[in-house]
Length: 390
Image 1: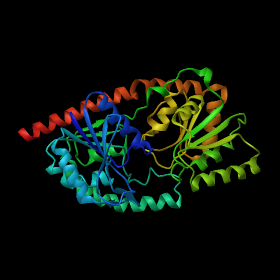
Image 2 (image 1 turned 180 degrees about the vertical axis):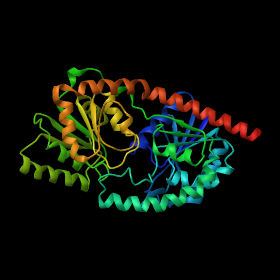
Image 3 (image 1 turned 120 degrees about the horizontal axis):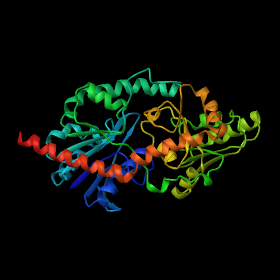
Image 4 (image 1 turned 90 degrees about the vertical axis):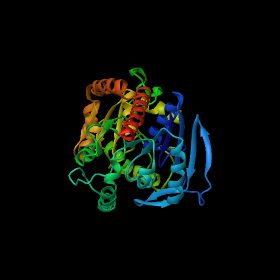
């Protein structure tokens, strides 16, 4: 098949959607498909498209980005590019609603005469009941998101029904229920996955280590990791935080550690950034506990990377994490230190980790999920042909 992927983030950026889309695109190329990715580059000023090739995936970058939930860039030029590329494609896969790449694609969807699949990595949650421990920042984002995205989803509801297959991260994801509620059919489930290099069942390499990996940011909330770690009873454990690069939030973490050392006494904490992927994987494999303290997540890759590496997890109640075996989800942030101590006591983390590992190995290997995606894309093409015939 000739596959066109529309995604707002891609290599060499580093984030959850990029990670998943990249292994999907490269995995499909390895299966013999012709894959093109159209993605954004906020640094570009003009619309002169530049075409690259990375691991047999053709990449076209256009000047477009989203900031404060508003889309910026050359919308008409992007739509013309999609029209032209789609003429020679068997199927178009748009990634994530409520992003510029999908929101600008939907107005021209009726002109696209090939199969269409929407890959949903969760979406804005309009419920208030699911938001806990709101900060002023997250409260403002919630209000603005309700206003901004409700109107956009309403305007696009009929357009969503022109998509042949809609793939969600989990059957209990909020987006899955939203689409079903509004009678948008053809919903399927496609779990996130991890690369084979993470899988580990060797307890002998484990250390008294708690880890968190993710961009240093308010949403990832690594400050809560620090606060919680200093309150656990097990002082012989080490905390490692790994981020992509130094920023103002990194500076806050360094400052906070010094304050906590003065208050509670020195604790073994490493705040790392700009380390290699190989070294990151080594750290994750050594950890007994993966600690996730985010305000919002959907199906966090970091959790299943930890489970694949034989770690148990402690997490805030975000996204679909509570449906994953292998750890403890807390209802209140004050419960985090107790949950960590519970896993440490009598090595209870081991039993949790085994359950999580079995689940991830059976369901979340990249080879499995790429082949499932290939089947869904073929189904989208088949459904589109049936609709044309009818």
